[in-house]
Length: 422
Image 1 (cartoon, rainbow, N blue to C red):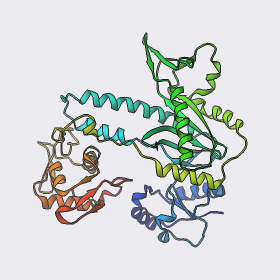
Image 2 (image 1 turned 90 degrees about the vertical axis):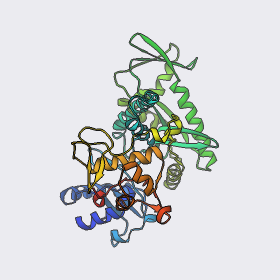
Image 3 (image 1 turned 60 degrees about the vertical axis):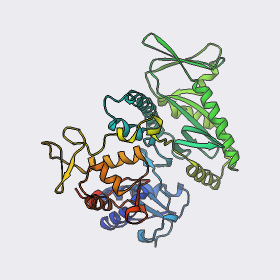
Image 4 (image 1 turned 180 degrees about the vertical axis):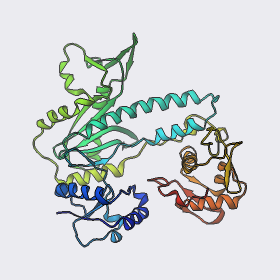
């Protein structure tokens, strides 16, 4: 039976600050914590028996004498559960998050000049990827309503088979089977033709052909089966389902192929469709140990798509707008003088804009930055001033003096900006 170790608010916040790179968000204690503790204690026996867990900032342990200050990173597992209306925990092993490629494209679009010849291409890819992400976001809402005792949810997994990569919008793992969800966010009327592997959309009296999602989902199943076998993991049945996230979209299948409807559904119907599939596989084939092993391997082998966007669009570093955008007129760069930032008559400054600019640098130019690069990008008048600023960020680094390089934090970027000098 798991019990809770909950510190007082001050100690808890200090603990969260020390572990800020573990993506733990502090929560208010008092009644909120008391209520959550009651919810978790009622369902804690359903959780896998790791030594410790953090859930919404609460420490779960199977040892009543454990205190947070004794926790070690190797003993911890970070989960991001959601709680349904019944107050039951649903394990989401890899939660919904904005893909790194979208963040990179957004930063690039923000800092590329309006008249740049590659701007249209950047915005086109950004809009396409954002449409896909919004579709996944819509499906994620309905996935939070499925039976919490049956599924582990993974969003946006990118795995490698040899020299090839394959990407899964969603993977749902159970003790009986796994299912791959391929999300499509199309408007209009859709027609699936399994015999010719054609997929078309009719919108505004125009018909356009796209890559067939059914074929794509079948390929993902084959790739995932190959990956499971290559990692010497326990074999399991793998299903697939094409999910249409736009509830106004009408989809049809060519006559004589009605069985294909079982492979397609709207996002709002995902719960009932998953129940139908679950009834096909009543026998459990994976033990708790098998599921833990598979989960660990999935998370460790995930390689997010993170290309060099400057190389991707053939853009020179010198073409990127540098500095901080003014929070009032949204023009860059602001200039640093006597401890304050100025842009013409505007004299406003915010920590968010400062951190936004630094994140833009890492996303566009790469995962490291030197003091000299920091000074040039933010237009500091001297190296000493820029050095004080970058040190105050407490970024991970390697090297000494002029050879020191600071690194982009992997998680919870700049969670504690209180030390930043403005």
